Length: 351
Image 1: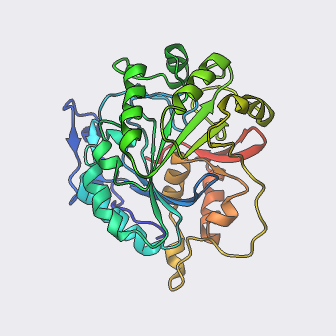
Image 2: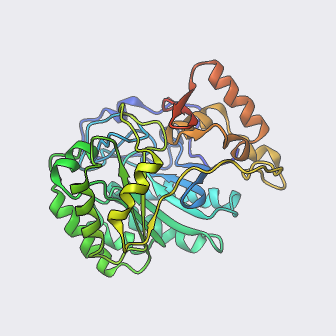
């Protein structure tokens, strides 16, 4: 098995998911109630080889419903309704790090928003001493709760937050937030967090045609970012298949708009052509080839969490995994979708 999992062959108990209680905590001793927490490693065009930690693997739990989301559509929520116990997350990460010592980053994300996870501080402080030398901790957030989770976020080497809008109208169009959220309060929270954070603070501005690409909105975003100590600004557009039928901006258009961000440490990440390589999958363990092969259900979960470019699977998957992948495609559980000039494997979340 190529990644740590706290699960058995029994399916997730749907009665627990539909509970009317506002918060349900899964018992870490009952592995049949826990789906995959660890996914990857995957190749990130921004951060290198990344091993992912999904703090909400059982369902999408987010206070946004962004039009460009790589996951499915879902009504925004202000807090997690189903919470993984901290000890389960720590155990999963500990086991995964024993298998993957060559990663560049350990990336905290969620099928949703990771800063909604109430045990974030406990988890990050427990696993930080376990990180291999040269591996950084990273959290990928929508930026809505940086101040509320300030204590935990200060323990991360890198905090990447999204800032798709600095005008309320654009914010509602592109991020589709919970009605309880106020953009002015979010911006103030980012400002206050940035003033005290000592790590690498990265802003991502993702533009969607006709939603937030108006120059008025971009000037407002740039003006705000100039007020805070920012390490990098990633300006981009839709790179993977999204939940809603929206359109990306061309790289040429992004280049034109980049002038608005003059004076900021701006980056325009873009997918590069795959390099020729003779090495086997980075998941391969030197002493046990069986560790490099995930099951079909694990692959389906991984691709449902993060669509994988067709030209990347040869570098990420073992030969046995490639066989499983083709089986999933033939069964219709995974399909190939075109996004811009690239083709991706996409899937529904594994049951």
